[in-house]
Amino acid sequence: MSQHLHIVFGGELETPERNVFKNPADIHVVGIFPDRKSAYDAWKNEAQRTVDNAHMRYFLGDLEKLMDASTSQPEDQG
Image 1 (cartoon, helix red, strand yellow):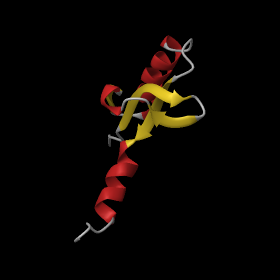
Image 2: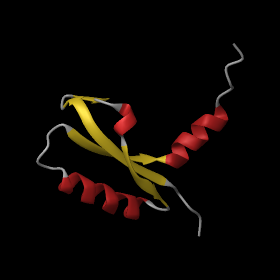
Image 3: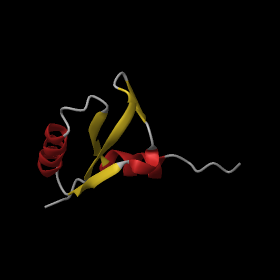
């Protein structure tokens, strides 16, 4: 069985209209998960837990895509 890693993270946004964190140092990393289903379940739990705060937002990210992108682009030699 191959793994396909996902990350769930979130925090308070400056404004609900933009995905800009108020304080990036306070981002809550829920965890890294071995599959989309378990990541989705964690994301849903955090989103429901903070539903009353319009400034709180949680995200589910695909780490495999990020890892692929980081290895396919040349490093800045500057």
